[in-house]
Image (cartoon, rainbow, N blue to C red; front, side, top):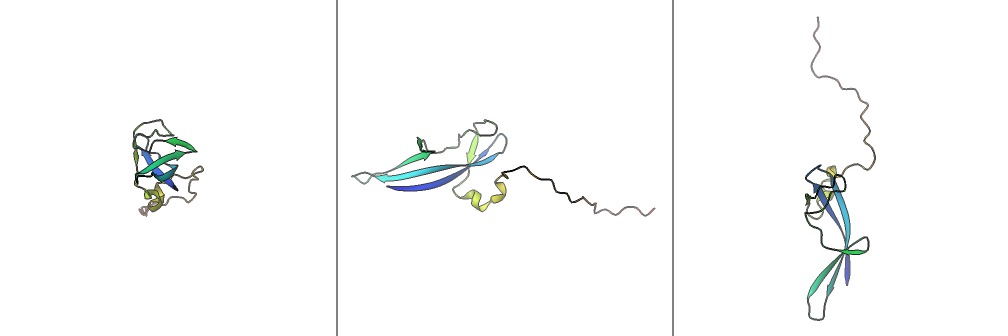
Length: 100
């Protein structure tokens, strides 16, 4: 029996929140050569993830799944963990002021 850790990324279609859920997938084979998978989340057996996941932020049931490894190639989609600190740099206009 082999175990594999999978991070499945989701995006809510209601509030556009992006999150990941961790699963352990156990691959097994019976005496007849048939292969099977068992999905575990927090040590409990769960069905494989689907696009009907519930958003942890707004509770919407219309989430979509990204392909495996998508967020590792697009880290800009992962929301920051802490509060966002505003940039203290003052904004300067590129338009010159009138001389009169």
